[in-house]
Length: 577
Image (spheres, rainbow, N blue to C red):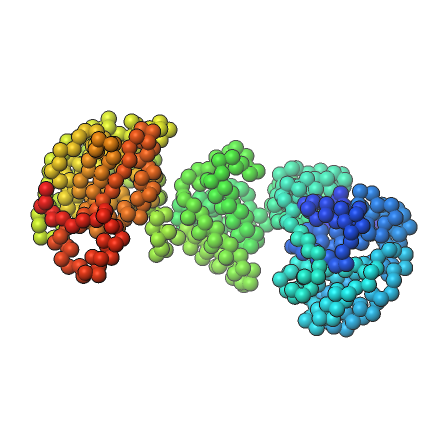
């Protein structure tokens, strides 16, 4: 019976053209070999399975090869054949995890003085170098400072942060990146072809995704799958081996989280637990699924690897929530990974985090409130009201309750012309700005001349042009500041407005709650009005405060307000004309 050799050992690269996903490193090392500009110490760092040790062995051979081919060892000359023998003394591979003491490094310091036997350079490959003790690092430092001319050190590590800066500063550092899913997928397909093994492409893609950027992990999963399905590998076979979920299950779980349907979440997870699926894998796959939802929401051209049907489902989910909710869900899932790893009750931890992700709107934060407001806006935009009949009647017959302000003076109410539905944002320019028509509530405010906060319009002879321009401008504000409901509320407290001969719209805001909010966005508002009629109009904003309320203010408060708003701020009585 032939000896079984795992795929990652059988297909370990021995030339540079077989190293995948590390072109930035391969090109640099090849150029050094061709130019003969070899450093005395190299540091290869990166996550597991990205080719650090394999690249170190190729580099050691290429340095000494008698007939290198494009910077790669020929693997045929006498030096290459000698170095391929594990008993050779010129390429020494040392495991720092098991030889991490100062005595091991002292022994190394004595041996580096001896010249190579058959090669030009004697190469020491120290794997997992971060495992060395502080004393061992100190012993190694002297050798790195003044190495013999025939010595080259290659240090490999997955945790570069644990290496002292004195060692790092003496090495040429190369950071090995995670290999992309496409490169892993193509590499695995080539391996299966060489093995004359039948497979479905979706199965290969799924293995590449779970390889998570590691070539070794990808090939190890492939080994398990080949043993499970020796004749042909299907997508279902890979799911069974990995303990993964079908895409439909991920969609249903994501939909339940977005809809805050806790009962459905627990139903799905109970079904998953009964099948014995891996909870850590499920958490990772769900995180990736929500990341894809966020990508679909924000990148119009994003398709990922989904079919048209699956992409349509994801697009539907993306339209039902905002970026805040998606980011919080992703954050919760990411933080739960560490908790799951060390927990003996993974299902409880997982369920608790999913319920938390589904109910994030209950958080007492500004971002949560804004997200909730955006969700309500989205419902209104699509017309999905709980009772459409009641909503319609309410719009047709708006009722504004007139409530006097806190001051003792009575609010002045002036009748205004009903603004026509034709005077809406369809008249806006540029034409590509598309907004809803003038709201009935705003028409009622203009018609009645009052809000629940007190008087809005004083007795002025406003022109139809001023009425129309103000209406268009406020509708633009609503579109360009969709989550700043307080800013819109400020615009509902306009004390006066007029359009002068120079096409300057003069708006006067009344009450403290208005001028403070509007003042924060004056620059943006000035830019906004320039979008009407190709920049024909300009904006001038000022604020007034009733004298009655000003009497309760300290001189320091008055000085502060006047310093903040300057000549934009004045005091006025409510009954002033």
